[in-house]
Image (cartoon, rainbow, N blue to C red; front, side, top):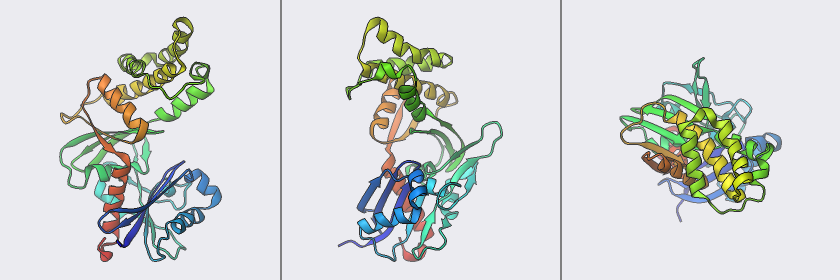
Length: 307
């Protein structure tokens, strides 16, 4: 049986993902839960982690490498930031060890953009970038990373030069649940309305200043011309994503296109959005990217163990 070499953890604001990994980078066991930073701060980070380690019967000597919000100021132990322009290689060398633990637990830093005109921060995405692009990546890359807080990142020769965060996912949740538009999407089933989604993406992309008007149109169109709640939901989603793409694509786009690091439904929606705008996007699975990034960091941190 293959022996485990370390435990990799992606600890987000509302999600927790853990993998037991061998020396070849193969996943031997996996755990997922909703015990993100917010929940763990109440239950206790050590207790949450130990419960998952016990569930996969991880040996006591195995080291643990963590990325994400566990390293935030309000997380377990603050891991600080690497400032832009930030070489991805620097992320490997600035991991912080969690004190008072018998097990060797390290938390990777985030990346900060200390620009008074465009301040920004990321945690967890830097590890996905590392896994998706590698340390030897040359040339320019424009990376889209959808999520509750989507990131658009410009990388050149392995250095994160600039990035922007868009609250697209959080806005969709608020708009669809806490405004008059909740009536338009009430009872929406799982059916997809690709035509409504793409139309909304294009309209918002071409006239982002009218975003508030585009959003209300989902309600007025339904009242005047009918339409299923699912169509209204897709219109809201397409509008918010279209506005995000209008900003993300406002600068130069590399000839190689966009790197789209995403998973699940978001991967599908953003692929359709880029398709609606005839923009070339190369998909990268977000789970695979973060695991590769954590594997690279583990090998750099625990060289003596030949990971």
